[in-house]
Image (cartoon, rainbow, N blue to C red; front, side, top):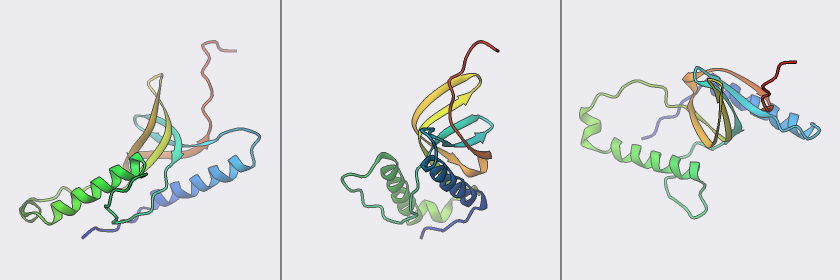
Length: 140
């Protein structure tokens, strides 16, 4: 049986995501994104909102992150029914993640582009809204 989890931090991120949408509707062509600050760097991306579900049926047309989530839930379901689940001691951890799409990561002076990333909410230091500006080598 799957557990439901609650995170104040996750819900705050959902509010910031709504602010990004509102700001982008009222902007003059500026494409703001959610900015997630972690010890690894700054992640700029669009929050993929998923409805928590126990639906593990893989359907044609499921996007990559939906497919990954369904496979993960299916794996957990099988594990929970296995003998291993009865004899193993589970490590306590926070399983809540956010998924960003169309991601730019700025870390250690490098810019990395990724189609998506999952970030565990307990690794998030801060959240903001903004856009990625091209870096210049010269200082004015």
